[in-house]
Length: 200
Image 1 (cartoon, rainbow, N blue to C red):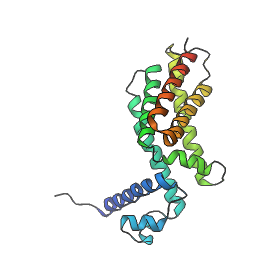
Image 2: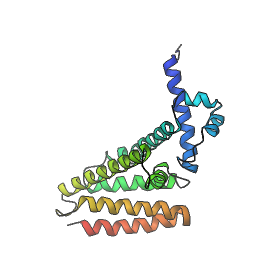
Image 3: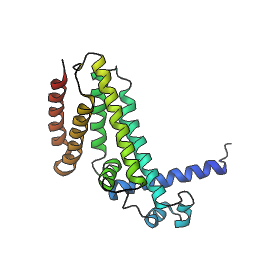
């Protein structure tokens, strides 16, 4: 019979709190996270939540990190199974489409970028680091596509990464406002033109 150690139980409780906080942040944003609401949601006292997260900001940072890890697991990691080059880049975009469909009701990462773009502090720095890291992953995949001869030798990796990101932001935006199916159709057509514009 397996026994749960105190450390294991504490980690499981922390994960449960984070999961609930992530759901709340998807609808209300990180700034909308309320310790009181979260505590009631998981059946704990406020002090019980604070025992796992020293402050509201610590909780917000942990939720942001969880969102980034889930995004990478859903979008990047499955794409790495594809051959380097345009097949992998296309797979990244396809998985990002699926992420956008799944997160029509709210994406923690996008709402955080909007919430903290004009602020100072730890949350702003964490959002910038997360977004910059993802942009670097895109540029890496683009550089591999150039090396494989799938994209032009003079491809500006930073520019193409920006264009990919901008189109996906458009998908998130229009998907929430006008319906995902129509937004996906427009975005997919835009991507086909984008790939052609950078190919040899």
